[in-house]
Length: 208
Image: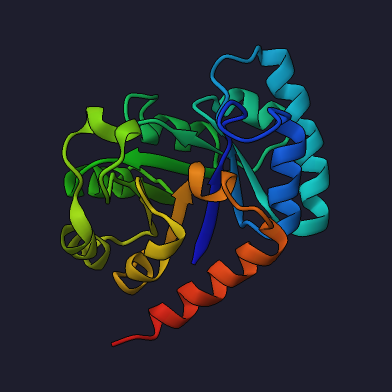
């Protein structure tokens, strides 16, 4: 189960991007996406360099939203491509593995296309009702999400409205991971909560 935190310095208390991200990677998230669309290339580069350096101690993979070129230049581990971003196959050809290519998807067909084009994983959502994902249509629901996970040949990470109380449900549905902004942003004690979330998800995965 991949715990995939996505940054938004405006939603999290304090607004200090590096401090927020550093706390999450030290607390044990597997992947961390820097998703700060309003920052300059120079600032993003500097942030990535700091986080990549720290990630070497903790094993977290650092990804950048949308910019594979900048991610690679800063030594990050991969890129997260939005649904309207560059084609997956073009990025895959330009940046071979182990550079990670993750794609945002909103339907089964998009998941299969991303897999065929060389993505390493996808986020799929919204699984639940959430205002931030309303432009992408009604939520898939757990039943539909489960069907896609069963068919997909790559990890499918649940995105959209995934709260701590729903982690077990999506884990039991076959999710390859959980991707979220607010879930990780709202943790009062990430050093206790993230290991607990992982343990809860592992237990749910064992359910028949």
